[in-house]
Length: 193
Image (tube, rainbow, N blue to C red; front, side):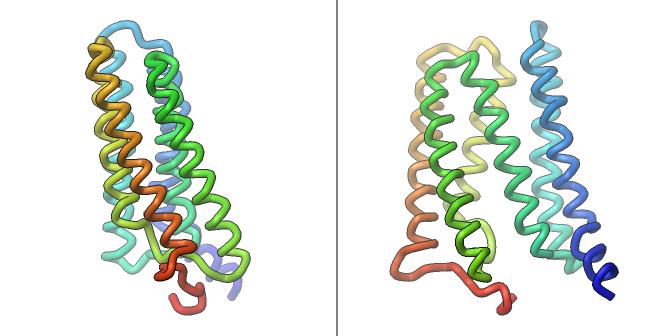
């Protein structure tokens, strides 16, 4: 009985799509870091687009076919964050101003990981991503994919993109701090799912 429940919890289409997104990361890194021609940058951006598409699809499948699982609630954001971190890291090699975005990203995600782990040990977790986090993720992906697609982006435009990303990440970080520790915390007991 336990093994059957375990398989039902882990081996779902949404979870497999999250694992697929994780598998795309090293492929993106190799292609982007070795890209010279425009078509290679388009290929790298295409890989990111596939990653974003599967991210949107897995949530819809999970909700529509009742495949929402605790494993999925953990695996999906890990795939998102690993992709975002890799993308930001690769781009910060080319655009030094994005190192500020990378630093804030690490702070924000580090906070979420620690707060999430502490609450998980207490049998609690956020019921899902916050709206501010979803908006931040969308803005970050769009802006960074744009930088991949246009490898000779003017410095002033890159500076504006970095500022926009930092602002949205800052707003998201504040929202997650309030969700975990604010007066109206959004953390719920796992038993109440």
